[in-house]
Image (cartoon, rainbow, N blue to C red; front, side):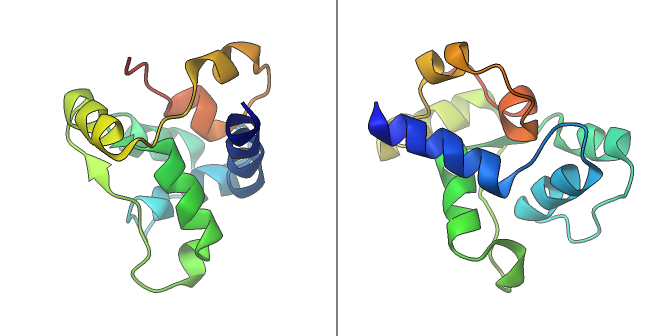
Length: 116
């Protein structure tokens, strides 16, 4: 449980509020969109069908985020691919943690998928 709480804190540290255009741009850049738009709706449209592992997003931030050339998060074409990767790697962000969460983090509100 302590690990899951730490993950939540890291997500909030590296990826801000869903009303912050900078948070959306950072998220777009994390998945390889160097030309991330200024507009939140455009970023949201780009990310709508993107499936990424939340733990990988945190590791992206820890490794220096967008300041490190070539640093990007692996994106999956489907929820099924993401599910298999998450299971194989053991990189799980707890659904129970989300149930207790009432913040407005861009990642947790828009990218977290129910996998198991």
